Amino acid sequence: MNKKIAITGGRGRLARVAASYFRQQGYEVTVFSRQMGEGMKALADLFNPKILSSFDVLIHAAWSTVPFSSEADPGREEREDIPLLKNILESLHRLEQGESVPKFIFLSSAAVYGNQKKEPATELTLCKPLSRYARAKLFAERLILEAAVHDSRLNSVIFRITNLIGISSNKVVPQGILSKIVAAAKGEQDLEIWGDGKASKDYLWIDDFLEALKTAAEASVQGIFNIGSGKIFSIFEFVKLAEEVTHQTLSIKYHPHYSWDVNCSKISSAGFMEATGWKPQADIVKKIRELLK
Image (cartoon, rainbow, N blue to C red; front, side, top):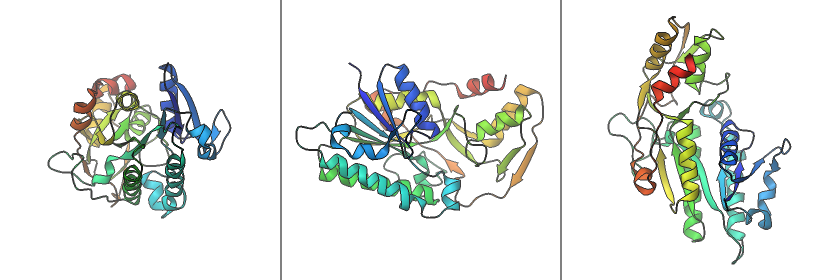
C-alpha cells in the first residue's frame, strides 16, 4: 500500500507540481493551504492529532515569500512562516505514544550558503546567507533540528534545494530565469536581467527534484541534504543557447544587481546520492532546447 502524503503550501507552484507527481505515482495525497477550497484542506486541520497522525509523510512546502518579496516585505517570514512551522512542530510533538508521527520533509534553500565561489558547498559548509529569505530558511532549519533533538520520534529531512528549472514561474518577480528566457525567445516579453548576466548557479530540472522528494519519502534517511545537479550555468549561457536555438537576438533590459542575490552558487549533492542512490538524470541543455523548439 502506498504512503499517505500531506503537502502544505497547496497554492504554491512547487506544492501543486509535487502533489500531481505523487498522485501519478499512486500515492494518496492531501494538500493543505492557508486558504482552503479548490480541493485543499485548511492548514489548521494539521493541528488535529487524528488528522496529523493519519499521514506517513508531511512535506512542508508552505512559505509566504521568495527572495524578492521577502526584501520588499521585511519580517513577513517571522509573522507568517515561522509561527506556522512552530505550530506544526508542536503538533507533531504532542502526538501521543502509539500515534504515528509522519516523516517531516522541509523544503529549504541552497541560498543559505551565500556565494560559493570555490569548492561546492557541502552540508558541513559554513552558511553565510545574504538575504532575509535565506536567513529565515536557516532559522527554520534550526527549529526543526532542535525539535528532533527533543523528540526522538521526529524523523526529519531538510532539503537545501538549488535553483529549480522546468517549472512555470511568476512573471512579476526576478526568480525563474528560464521561464523568462523562453518567454523572451517567443516574443512575449523583454528579458529583464538583474546584474551583468554573469551570475553562475547550480540548476536542477524539476523532474530530478521530484524524484529526490519521492526518494526522501521512501528511504530511511534523515538530516540535512543538498539537492542540486552539479551543473553550473550563467544567465548568459542560457541566453546564448536560446538565441542559438531560435536564431534570433533576445531583447534584454538590464537592471542593477540586488545585493541580496547570490552571484555564485555551487553545491554538492554527494551526501544524498551516497545515502539513497538518487542521481539527477536530466540533460539540462537538451531539455532547454526542447522547450525552445
